[in-house]
Amino acid sequence: MHKDKTIAIVCNYALNPNRIGGMDRFFVAYDKKLKELGYQVHWYFSSYKEPIQFFEGLTIFSAESSSVESFFINNLNEKNRSYNILVTHFIALCTSFFKEAKKNGIQKTIAVDHNPRPLVGFSLKKRMKNKLKGIIYSKYIDLFVGVSVYTKKCILKDYGFFLNKKTMVIYNGIDTSVFKKRTQEHKNKFIVTSHLRYSKGIQDLLIAVSQLPSNIKNTIQIDVFGEGPYENELKSICTQLNLTSSIHFKGSSANLNVLFANYSYMIQPTYMECFSLSILESLASNVPVITTTVGGNLEVITHNKNGFIFEPGNVNELKVLLERIILGELKISNETNFLIESEFNLEKMVDNHLIYIQ
Image 1 (cartoon, helix red, strand yellow):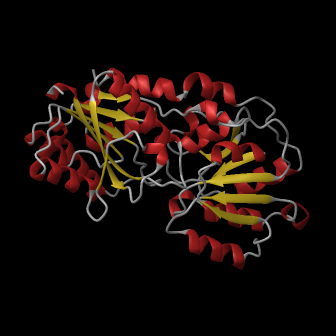
Image 2 (image 1 turned 180 degrees about the vertical axis):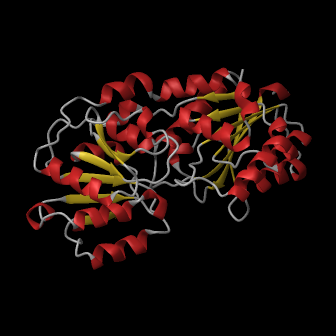
Image 3 (image 1 turned 135 degrees about the vertical axis):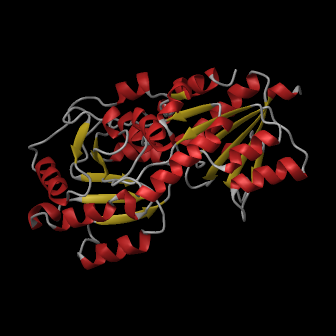
């Protein structure tokens, strides 16, 4: 294999057999297309503890006990591996890692930014550090990719507007063909699919539900799919607010592509987001979304058309939305899947990423 056809893809991402989502499907489709173009492809993930059939065609190296960046650099040095192209996902931008990669023979580096920003922004100290890192290390990255217009703006704001000419937007996309479409109303049934951490705002949803009138609260069912560091705290809040008959924690699931269709709406009360694959997956299932104004959400959700929008942290606004939806005062009757199938599909995402490889 000629050196200019070797590519390493480094992802701060743990592969999980119980969570086969949009990015997992992208990894497999991207790998297939690269190989069709004659590339040798090596994947570096933060964790891959056991063989997963879904990924059996990928050549995978797992960092496990170390950071995936350090693991990759050590592989270049100790295993004498060399690559022409480096692509990163979920990796912090503008760090010494990119300088080290260039020193080890990488000719072209593409950094894809999926990382959400805090709702209130970074501290002054953090902003100053980012600007300095942009000046020092951005020269080792040939292309910055934001997964939404919001993300591109954040890259330029964080690291310097001088990066505008080498910063592009490539929207996330999903394999719409695997999603079962909702064909009937599932009154008062809501789904949450999320990593369970504080910044996802699920505690606001619990408080909002607890404030609903009893005759409405007793009819609602909300299933929460996902795991994370805030899970026990959320369950404790649920118990304290006497919501255990309404809120059900389901853990991770590899079958969300068929489960979405069993619900009337997805709720995503997040404080920070780049461009949510969960929103795309819900809409592809013809399930409208209740979410916040953060990140790239407004680039796909139009209020009262394919979902409802509220301000992050505004518990009362969320409560009113839920109450009006359950009473039938608010309703999304439009088919929501067409936008996703035409504009945010997996094939389009893969093809757009390939443009900058060749």
